[in-house]
Image (cartoon, rainbow, N blue to C red; front, side, top):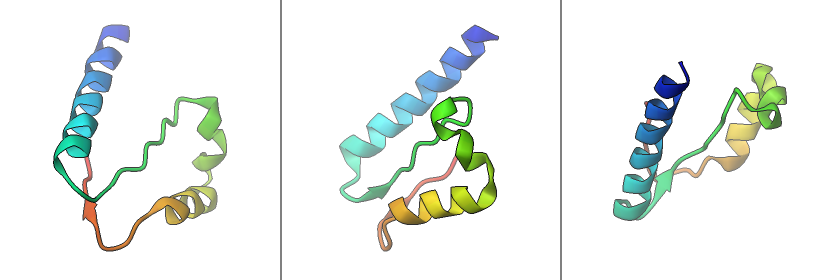
Length: 64
């Protein structure tokens, strides 16, 4: 299981590095729901507020 997590993390890291290097304006908001730092975002009002504060209108969006 741990190896699977590392592979997925590697793909995410590669994708983010590619976007940062090749796209002038981008919207990437990193949230790790396994981290206690983001525990409060499991409530949808808090999650919506968190994303709304960081979202930049009119630039490229990428979803996985």
